[in-house]
Length: 294
Ligand SMILES: Nc1ncnc2c1ncn2[C@@H]1O[C@H](COP(=O)(O)OP(=O)(O)OP(=O)(O)O)[C@@H](O)[C@H]1O
Ligand SMILES: [Mg+2]
Image (cartoon, rainbow, N blue to C red):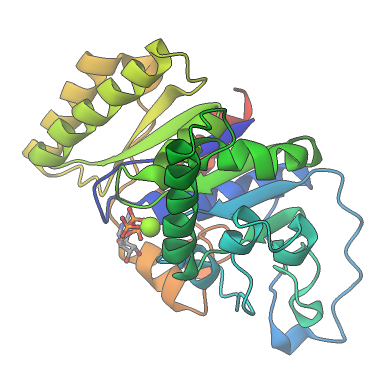
């Protein structure tokens, strides 16, 4: 099952959601509980991790490349763009779930394909290639729109879940994601104007679906929720009325631990000790449960 975390608005919590969802799913598949502390301090003394039956791939499709940083990982020059351009194999670009000291994500079951700003140039290259084949009168598929299906299709069966972090735009990268993903999760900041933007976005996804694209909106995820604010509660109610209770996830509260976890060397909420009892962690745990039954 492939989940795309989408919203053309910036700063709504897409990357935070993608990273915590992917790690939460990996923890669920590989025995629950808090992830072992990973990092240079436990090099050489960490007990061997059991081989992991369940695999989750976090795919960064945003040239800002925030997923690696949010997990505290150095991408080491790897970028999804090389796979899309046909210059690398999946093996070259995937960071495995091995311990950190062996160059992995340090989280059993969690694999990462990072992005860098090279993705901007490669997208342009692919679009130019499309235009040239169009001029030559070649209209058969295989262009930018289908690039993920073409290059990542073979990886589909290797992972129980693929979670895709999308850029804050509706450009050709997002279209390629739409053609590859099964479901969209749309984080929406609980402020009035943001909710209106989400309505346009979900309407667009519905249009694409009518045009035969496989993607459907599975969940609206209210983010930066402040339960004491009347406006935030109103926006949440409006979302529930518009999309139905079953389509709106438990809101993710605005909480300073979310930023602190990322700042603490790139930890997810499920491994950052001070976040253990945070309502934001609990809400992301509920999202993991919700998504894992789809
Ligand atoms: N629930 C939350 N409470 C407090 N801060 C949050 C919360 N969720 C995300 N943030 C912070 O808000 C900022 C933006 O979040 P994030 O990067 O996840 O958004 P984004 O939608 O991926 O942004 P972009 O569109 O630029 O890719 C980050 O600094 C993140 O730590
Ligand atoms: Mg982001």
